[in-house]
Length: 116
Image (cartoon, rainbow, N blue to C red):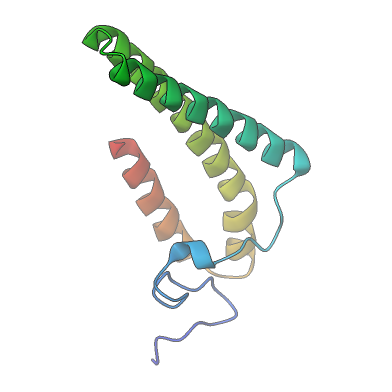
């Protein structure tokens, strides 16, 4: 086996040049989902900026930690929406093409996000 990419499966991150970000979805995200993810990320970015301002202002640790929990929750909601879309599109498409190895990739993603 040459380790090269096959048309029946998505390339591994190593095959895609060492960066998983180099791959693209076969089916684009809907405009509605894209807008929702962008909105959620912008909210988290704003909250994170607020946390930085709180630290710069030497605010009470408990208040900063509460805001950090809100940022983590916002980011987690983005991850959950993206995972759902990944399962409904990318994973289904790969399984339909006979690539059952994608199941292991999904399990790895889920394990990674459970730790965060």
